[in-house]
Length: 474
Image 1: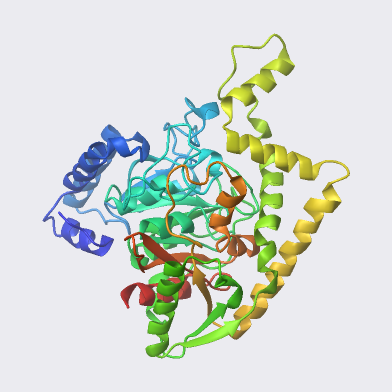
Image 2 (image 1 turned 30 degrees about the horizontal axis):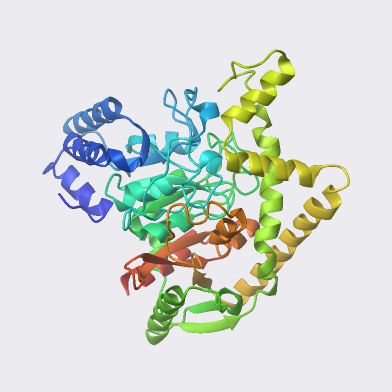
């Protein structure tokens, strides 16, 4: 059975030409077949089947099907599901089970979604390649010698391999959009505060957002609409009204669309195939009536530096709670309390997490706070001003999702700075908190996927997805 969209699946489920149980068992069989790819950390075999049976009974008894009735979904393993593992792909939480549900999970369940399992990721969402997981890396669906991107690489690979129809990820600086670009699917990061972070394990609290990975924009819009909205458990969640994203998408026309193309996003070091494919898609839209507007974002070179100062500072604070005293991994090699703290964290955290904790602690320390952290916050405000100004002139800002196609496993692990540059185009939207999406635009000369990155103004997710849908369809 080949399903291209949830609309297709829903019509079959509601006509009873196929049951939820049959669909779920099909996906679980696929997951088992791909077990060697390490995409899922845990699979809900029994729970998913029981959930599907309950939904079938509901339909037979005349119950009203939810908006996501029978949708098979995967969840990144830093989002809480009560009673299920919540490892964040880290040894320090290897045997931890969540004691509550994330708000996003509750809202999806209320609309009859089915969760298949928890997907692999970079440890505590820190990485751009899914090579930092304590449970091993995930291969790219199009070339198993290459990475799927990160940190939501498991969720992206699950959707691309047909092991889930839609998956949730988390996006701090590009962790939904970059793997979406590497895996030839749609990856959406909504406006900061659009989706509650309650139940999302914190990396950098002023950046983190739950995002959606899907095969198409329509499915992403539907899932977003279910999750979005104010939550009393998250003070940073927005009161902004949740529209019908499908209606907003339908109202978007290519004719007269103003697409901002920053010169800084097409520098000489950009991979030639990426530049060719992205520019080619922009030219296609121009031929259909869109206007390409040259814009400049002169502070772009400071994005990576400012981002990594800010997020590592927040990470050093957020991860202080993992000390072996209350929950999670505790070392056996400790003679006193201080040694227990030190050894538990030393043995429990991976290299990249330790690197970011150390950097964050440094930039927050006395004598360096003003030099680094305060300056980075000032740069963040400059970015917000520049992007607001640009989006007064254009409808959307467009560029590549990544400066290069999926790279080889192990190619960049020896040089953290080179790895960080994988997010150079996605980081700005995270700094300013605006919605952004990666949409597939084709394949390079090695048949590797390339994505285009789009940014719209605050709370314009419907418009953003409408533009992305035109790009995906053209």
